[in-house]
Image 1 (cartoon, rainbow, N blue to C red):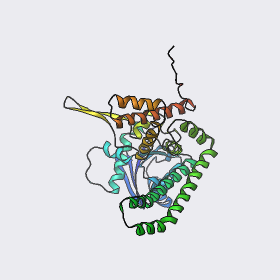
Image 2: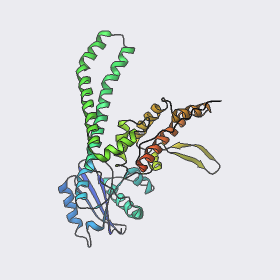
Image 3: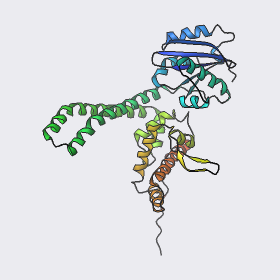
Image 4: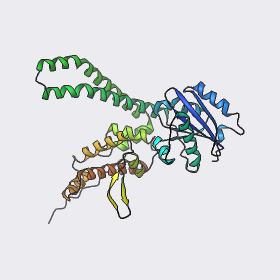
Length: 338
């Protein structure tokens, strides 16, 4: 695809800063409200330039969560070419930069899109049901956080505080709030389950992922969301990198001989869930528990072994999805000496 114009957008809660570029030259900078009307105002000015058409323009922006929604809705309806990129990727790809404001950021995003036009990664909008699922999992996380903020200090008070009357008073005052949060959490979990079960494709993916030992419903739902039903990420190695469990070499010449290490630029939520899955599966008799115990006996670092288990879980998930099958455990042979 040949693009004539490149538009970089710096997005904030209240405003959108547009930078229109052609042949590495900024033609127009415009700040508008973050609304459909504001977007239309910019497009009206951009259409003045010769040959400007939605069919030959690449819109590039950082992923900023719900603040993107108005713009993405407008662009999807116009069938525009959209590139959603991580902010860190844009920042580090442009080299050393001095100064920062919304106008400069929008122009830098446009320049990034222009320089990398041959390797553009067009954004595929998720289905509406995936957006609903994502909203519910985010709500679930917020409810869990609120529940932890209330219940954990009460449990710790029992262990370290001596004023029993005060502890009892605090428990009484928080009892209804904790109870309500638990009920809300149950309703959210039930709604997530219903959405997955009612959609044939989600139900298929969910059944395959949860067939793997150690991988539960919460992790399965999060993997489906972050891969956009395995449309955006369909390779195990790429997902291992995305979730921060892929080890990378740390060497340079003869002076630096560091150990392989994982990158901190990752989806920490997925990494935490995969860690819990790994902790669960090594507690159960099976191939991965045997692998873990064997490596511990060899003197390997336990965290390195757990990271290897996380990678093995990812490989199993993506292999089963690729083959459209549930996970089948290898038969264990009981060898009896005669």
